[in-house]
Each structure stands twice: as structure tokens, then as C-alpha cells.
Image (cartoon, rainbow, N blue to C red; front, side, top):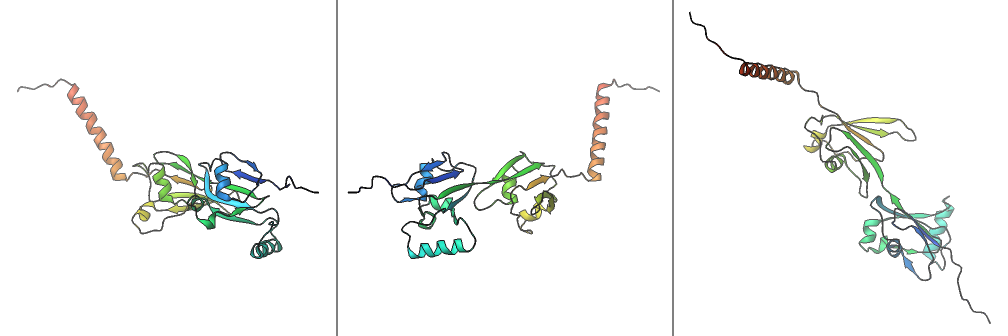
Length: 230
């Protein structure tokens, strides 16, 4: 007589931006949401996307699933994978919550950063999360620009494709706020520089005059006055 006491199934790997990454042995049908929850959920640094790699041919698969597997592997993809929205997954949508097979590798992706510097309330790095991040959103997240900011010429330094060099994109933030120009969607590793605006020459002269005037008034107040009799 023969009795099966254990099935030697490949482990499922949960990695990336989860609080407790690791490997899980499946003994029953399990869906993606349960495994994300079993890993204590996503971290704050995720971009909101989950990639599931199917490293082995599906067990007891339907004809549709096998056709999809064959189409993916025959097209030159050694390990087929699919992307799922973390937002839709947490909402409980069925299309974002697939059945996970033994041997699957689940990767909760890390968000890509952008950096803001210059005449803003707080120079810092931000993460591009699910749905993207626009320039105006990023400016608002750092507390907006300072009064001295050159908002008509905000520079975005963007990496060129397959290169360490960067393109320089000039953006008029005032025009965007007025609806005259489309907001710019930021890309991973963008550097946003808000420069300091130059004062008009008339304003500079006025400050000098006001400064001299204050000095003269102060000097006059501290001196002892006198009168002359003829």
C-alpha cells in the first residue's frame, strides 16, 4: 500500500517592499492578497505595483492558462510575469488578486525617488508612487516655494536614456498654475531646482535709497540740534 504524506511543492517567495519578506509553503489554494497580508503588508516605500513571476509551468492548469503560459515562453520570455495594482488589490478587486502557484515569486516594487532643491521650504527627496507625481504636486509636498523663488524658470534635470548625462527642462510654474501650460509628470531620479529670482534694478535702487534714508534719520536722531541767532 502507498500513502502520500507530503507533497514536495516549490516555495513561494515574497520579496521587495513588504515588512516581512520570506518564503511560504502552500498547502491550499492561496491568493495574492493573503500572501501580502501574511508578510505584514507593504512598506511606505512601495510604488504601488506588485509583480508576480511564474517560474514553473502551472499545475492542473486550465486550457486558457496553459495557452497563456506557452505564448509567453515561446515569445522569448524565460519567466513570464504580470503586474498588479496594490491599490486595486487592497480594494478586493478580483482581477488584482490572482491565485498564486507554488514556485511563484512575488515582488512588491520599490518607488523611484525624485529630488527637489533650491528656493523651496524644504529641500528633500520624494517617491513616485502609483499614479505618478507631477511637478506641482511635488512642490506642494515640500511646502511650496519661497517668496524669492524664480517660478518662471524651474529647472528639471532628467537622465538621458542609457546615460549618466542629463537633459535640462525649463518649466514655467506660473503658467502651469494659470492653466496656460500642462503640468509636467516627473520621472525617476529627476532633480528639480528652483532658483532664486533676480531683483529688478529699480527695486535694488529703491532698497539702497531706503537704506541711506534710514541711516540719515538714525544719525539725525542721535545728534544734538542747535539754532543760530543773527
